[in-house]
Image (tube, rainbow, N blue to C red):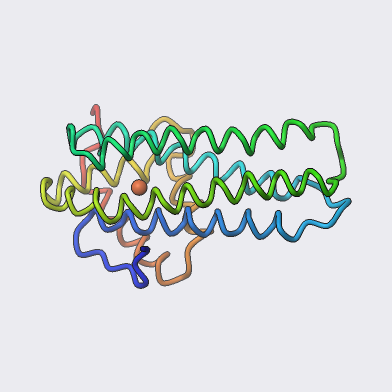
Length: 200
Ligand SMILES: [Fe+2]
């Protein structure tokens, strides 16, 4: 279950901010698809879906490398890696509905039903995954790793050193989160600036 009010008692708690942004983005895409009228353009929902896909894939990859892997063999972390792969499959299913419609300028009822079904399936899988990570993986991270290591993990999830715009995750989150959580995020970003950049 998501924390109703996010409190950053230790660095890994900033994970709730990312998860809440993912939940908000999923809810937005689902609502856009639900409200489609026959004849609407797919363009708007496609833009939001691309943001969701990019954020979710980056999150999963970084967690696999910088968090799940370090919990070597801990059952819920192994499950987490498997769930990440399952989420990728569900993302692909949404992409397939979009690609089947390439060249179509108008959405027909059948497309909307298929898109809605694929988006809801992805959102449910994401919710289940985030909930079990919060219940089982994050307490283990708090237990096993000190604050500096937790901060290093979170930095990997928030700053994309490989991208031209290293802050794109933070900017996407700021667009998804309510103002109180945006303020927590801004404070946390300053904290991240104090940890060493990996590989330097
Ligand atoms: Fe996560």
